[in-house]
Image 1: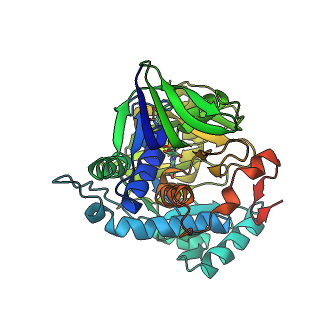
Image 2 (image 1 turned 180 degrees about the horizontal axis):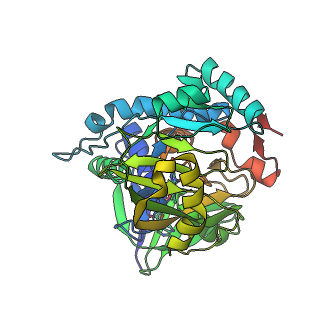
Image 3 (image 1 turned 90 degrees about the vertical axis):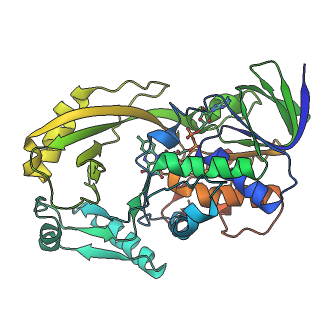
Length: 390
Ligand SMILES: Cc1cc2nc3c(=O)[nH]c(=O)nc-3n(C[C@H](O)[C@H](O)[C@H](O)COP(=O)(O)OP(=O)(O)OC[C@H]3O[C@@H](n4cnc5c(N)ncnc54)[C@H](O)[C@@H]3O)c2cc1C
C-alpha cells in the first residue's frame, strides 16, 4: 500500500476544490497539494450543471461582498488563469438579473435593495411600466415591480472550472483520478484519506470540497453535516416568438426563473419543495409541461408556443440549517476544513471561498472576513438570517 505525504489534500475537484488548490499554490508555490477527483469529466458535478449566474442581489452582507469580489476577479480571469497556451474564455455576460416583487415580498426586497446600495451595487427599483418598457414580452401587471441588478450576469461554467483546474496544475497541484472512501484521523486530527484504489494519502490539512456528496464523506470521520443532495431540473426551450435581444435572468416571486442562452434558447427552472433528496439525475418533461410552462406563459404570453428541446438535472448541496455556505475548520476535528453547503449559489462564490480557505489554512489574514460562515454555527444550531446570526 502506497503512503504519500501532502501538505493539503482536497476531496473533490469541482469549482471549490480547484479554486482552493489554485489559491494555496498561488500563496505558496512550494506546497504539496493533491486534489482527489473521481470523475474528471465532471458529468455529475454541480459546477458543470449550473446556470452559472452571478448576482449581487443577496440579503446577507457577506454574500453580497463575495459576489462583488467575484466580479472583480472575473475582469482579469482569462489573463490570470492562462496556463501555457490555454486561456479559459469564460465569456462573462453582465446581462442583468431581474427579481419580480409582489406585496408579500416587498418589505424584504426593499431592505435588501437598501443594503445592496450601501455596498455600491448597481441595483434599481423598476415599476411594472419600466419593466414592460425594457422587456416588452413581459406582463408584470400583478407585481409591484422588480429589482434589476445590472452588474449581475452569467458565464461559461465549464471554462470557469477548467480555468482554476488548469492553473492550479500549472502551479504544481496534482489532480488524482480516484475516489476518497474514508477520512483518516489521529485522535482529534484529520491526517489523510483512503482511496478506492487502495492507496492512502497522508496530509497536514484536509479540505472537504465534495459538493453534494460532502456529508457522505464527512460521515466517515464521524462529522455530521446538515448538507443534503437535492435534485434541481433545468429545461431548454425554443420559443416561436424570439425576444429582441437577451432576456436577463428573471426570477418570479414563486421562484420560477428563466433567461436567454447562446443559440436563441431559453433556460427555465424552479426549485420545488417536492424536489427529491438523493443522487438522482433523471429529468422529466412533465415537470415543465404541467407546472413551469403555464406559469411562464402567464408572465410571457408569447411563450405559449414553444419547443422543449432538452433538459438536465443537477444537485444542490442544500445546507438544511440555513441555506448558506459552511466555511472553515470543523471545531472538533483539527485540520479538517469545509467548503460545503452552497445550496445553489456556490459557483459564484468560488473565488472568495478558495481564497478564504487557503488563507485560513496558511494562517494569513482574511481578504474578506467570512467568519460568519464558520462551522461552529452548525454545532450551535444557530442559522444565519438576513441580518446575521439569530
Ligand atoms: C441546476 C443548478 C443550477 C445552479 N445554478 C447556479 C448559479 O446560477 N449560480 C451559482 O453560483 N451556483 C449555481 N448552482 C450551484 C453551484 O453549481 C454549486 O454550488 C457549485 O458548483 C458547488 O461546487 P463544488 O465544487 O462544491 O461541487 P461540485 O461541482 O459538485 O464538485 C464536487 C466534486 O467532488 C467530487 N467528489 C465527491 N465525492 C468525492 C469523493 N469521495 N472522492 C473524490 N471525488 C469526490 C465529485 O465528483 C465532484 O466533481 C447551481 C447548481 C445546480 C445543480
